[in-house]
Image 1: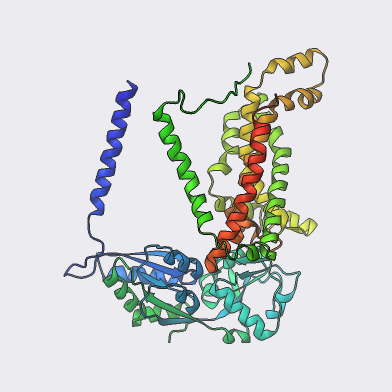
Image 2 (image 1 turned 90 degrees about the vertical axis):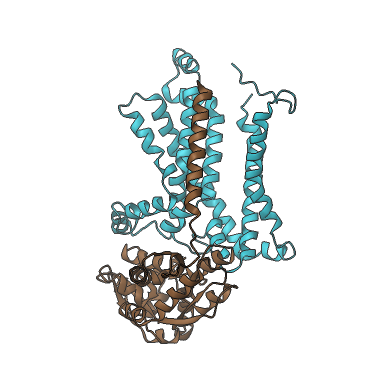
Length: 256
Length: 270
């Protein structure tokens, strides 16, 4: 009795495996003559979550048959993943340094610029006024870790202002930092202008003059080992197009 | 009845149908570790090993894991006793709820802790208001996060040991006039000691490796909340060699501790 059930289960598993193998046989990279098809894997910095999700939807609307799949994370984490062989077609980084970490890529193009801004919870309960509060040990501060572009830019800003920040946490990407602010866990965080805008119902932004000293250039590039090179190029062109510029500017980026 | 612990001689009567998957399983677990050792930057290892960051992260990791285990022992053993011995209604539900942190993704656990014990959390708000103390971004926060994810291991292990323990010894102690607390201390605890040790070891190991709940709830700051797993994750992004060194250090420490404990205590106090 047991042996029969075991054989039945094994047969069912084998059938399942064979059918899923069958689905994979459809080519994801070969472009049809009618246009693009398949999947475009886009690895993008966490700060591009809102804008690129919108651009992905617009791209899918203008290119039916193509699916855009995103992986949003800290740019340094993404660069490591790509170098370790993660299947990416496009990489949009929040700083040139992280794009340079990737070895097999096409020519990068700067598609947006972002500036830093101080984010405080709605109502500013800790009465943060500016950069000097970041050097105050009694305040709960969240910064991005230095490895991520937002943290590297913050470091430049503090050096320009000759302040030593006293952070309570170094977050691994800018979205984690702003989440801490929107939850009210920290009094202030150093994030991008675009993140403050994206979370404007839960956070308030405080601008500061030194922000212009550390502007982040966002480069985008196709990857040499892309499984869908035509789709990758089309998506990069779409980001650089007028529609791409509109979406990015609305979100607070500065487009070149 | 003594649980016979005589070693079976390999090759004698072990069936091949068990040995082959067993060896495969062993290889599956060991090959990544061997890969880690193979990829280590052996030439620069000594200088990296004794850097301040590594020592700091390691000390913090060991301190927090041990403290979390102690906390789990204080809370988990009574809880396990409650689940095993007390005739509560809805005991099955309580047991299921106790094991939830096991199946919960650690980051979700961290978010849950933040929503309750954070500065604006249900309990945390009162704590902050009355005592000016909040758990996130402190070493105590790391201990709480680690204890949250690791406690189910201890509770399950001790509850299992309690259920398997012979109740006749406790009954004998009662007939001899021993109070309940004395019986628990001198009869029950020693008889379930191997279960407690096994649970505590699992609890310690789980707490040592905790990442998601720690980084979400306690944040990341070197010296205060950056444990080894957090240090490895961040190092991986810029300098994979440092990440490998940190991983090897953690691996060695864990192996040493686990190897020291496994044989002597878990095989029973006979």
